[in-house]
Image (cartoon, rainbow, N blue to C red):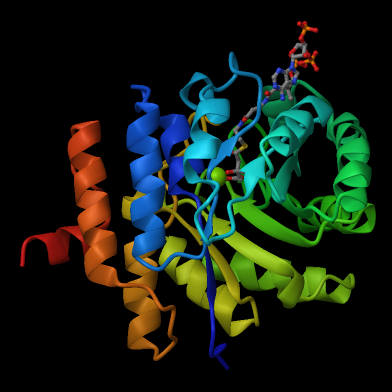
Length: 298
Ligand code: HMG
Ligand code: MG
């Protein structure tokens, strides 16, 4: 059975742009987010309040956020620690996301912490966010495979998911950071999570398309009852601390599939394609999304 409604969590402005070699000007990012909202996206991850040396592409978070914060959409931002939370709350952010790792190697590479140290770093973030009624998403990276450790055992993933939920995350997003998942693995992980008391309704899925499996993995997750899907306009994306990662599932490819399945998203595909084509021109290379290519040649 498929859901009748799917919530798309757009990550192009954050996951997409954090991985660009060139830093995109703040005004271009702001226009990108405005155009995404105009195309009908209702949850648009805006930026990250991380250390500017770790992700220089998003070092303009203080300048960018006020340029988009009046939009009538949800604008989650990434915060790794209390310093990040302070910065985001000072600008009026109402939704934040912490980001954990299922593997020690990536926790170290991405957060300079062990898995447990990272969870401990999130505890005070969570407590303060709760006190201020700020919504907290918990990302979990490397849920399927890790560039240093190989295949990631399902119980290891379940354990960190449980820890994030027990800490108070309002939702989780299962990250296939390097895009190695396949549909059978997705079904097995969702089943194990369900058995551990983490139902598909508490989960979003976050697939990168390195091996061309993102759309197939998404369909598998929808069939298991997941209704939140992360995607990036035009398929922008990657992760600067995981070498083999490429772009996320393209939002256009997702919308095309959902439309064919009769699942309404309220998104104007024409506007979205025009936005991704415009951004691709800024970045100086074509979008990897098949749907963007097909529709922009019409
Ligand atoms: P650290 O070097 O251990 O930092 O980095 P620290 O805690 O030791 O602090 C050192 C200095 O940094 C201090 O300044 C802090 O104030 C400052 P000093 O006292 O020395 O002058 N500092 C900050 N400044 C601004 N904003 C902050 C901040 N925090 C500390 N928030 C840290 C630890 C977590 C900061 C660092 O590792 C970091 O910023 N990492 C972020 C990495 C990142 O953003 N990765 C990409 C996002 S995750 C992703 O893409 C995966 C995802 O898409 C899902 C998937 O695909 O799997 C979500
Ligand atoms: Mg990602």
